[in-house]
Image (cartoon, rainbow, N blue to C red; front, side, top):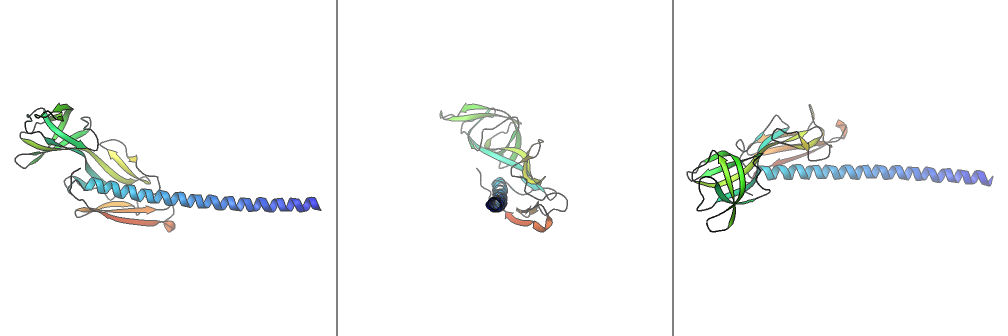
Length: 225
């Protein structure tokens, strides 16, 4: 009798432990899902805001077919030295990273007030006329009386294949977030142009009935990095 009682108590304790484990697993999944949703919102909004703030709608960025936006992704600015020659063009440079001739171009403002796009053929250390450090850029075509150059790479952002993604040039679409979005035909996630800004819609959840829609409007600020 005592053995039977002990066995029943053991079964009850094990059942309670299993219920607690199930509850903890469910809570952990909820916490993880909530964290991934918050991180996806933060990354998508911040990234698009940073890229749009340095460009003009229809010129430096353009919304695609409801799920993407193509951008000139500006990465830095070079200001021409007072005594700089035409080629190579010596500039004082500040930016998010170093210029990369393999993938970068330069949007150049000349003394006539016109912006021109040039290929960045080569970038190497240089020196301004006053002896301060700079960079020497070889551009194709060279731009006479260049004043300012903005380094950019071409890319596009996508709400696709369950995640917020970036595609550099002609490369593959690299995920920037976890795959927590409902995307594809008929899904609510998407990116669309709205005047000088963008409408960003992020649909979370695996089943339509469980979907939570997050919508934000992103506006450019037109300030250089």
